[in-house]
Image (cartoon, rainbow, N blue to C red; front, side):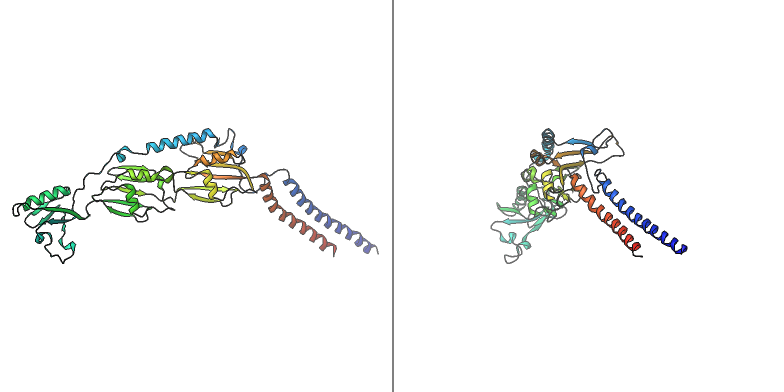
Length: 391
């Protein structure tokens, strides 16, 4: 009896110990939940605030987007546009077409069909045409070998007329270019039909050359940095629609040997992140992409989770120049006036547009991850308690 009584005295104490352990586990879960109420410091997800960016020790420069900042940006853009119109291109006017090797001429001698169509009238026109040889000469009956390279069409007509006048009295000669093969311009890059285009007797503008090439690929072309190479000089042109690029292209005449390159925009992107409906990377098709357009293409701000603060991060830290700090532009999108500022503020390739989350959003995300943990702890403690009591 004493030994059995001792066992009965020990068993309740074991139950109380296990109950106490289960209660301790529940208490730990509650303590974690209560501790989280002290603030959102532990809240998961990206966040950005003015307090985290400012200060003397900050490695970025915080600049609010204001009307004066937008005005300065517009003035700088206007100055860049003015300086981007090279006088050497705008003042150039094509000279009269000059014949070269590879061109094909059609020579007509009136009242002498045997000279105009030596192969016969029934033959194709090409059989009666004269090809300018690599040395710049061609052969024509009675006129002999005539060097026509470098001549205008009128000069070539006079040279052939002079050669025929020794055998024909007052010959009537007409010369026209049937095929252009000596002079070309080359279009490269994001054109629908890139390649070489012949230069003809009709002056060719940059706009016409782009049209003949079928235009540019609207998704992949970067019209803000079109490169026209003429000789040893390269000119960078902004032909984007926002800069009235079509009008500018119509003013520029191309010269034989010119090369036009339209780069692809694969590396020209702005990254929209944070509390927007569709975070994504947006490609630049023009030189001007406003903050409103960037946010709009990303679906706009999330009305439920967004705090209304938008930040534009520009630049990066440079090891070579530690004093050059990235710039973060801040916009309070909760203000109605902010829409006007955002529509005038230009973003640049490489910018990161970040829409900050509201505090309640961060808290909700935190609790959504914390509550499953506390529920699991509580369930474990309860299970342990009931299993021990059932013994």
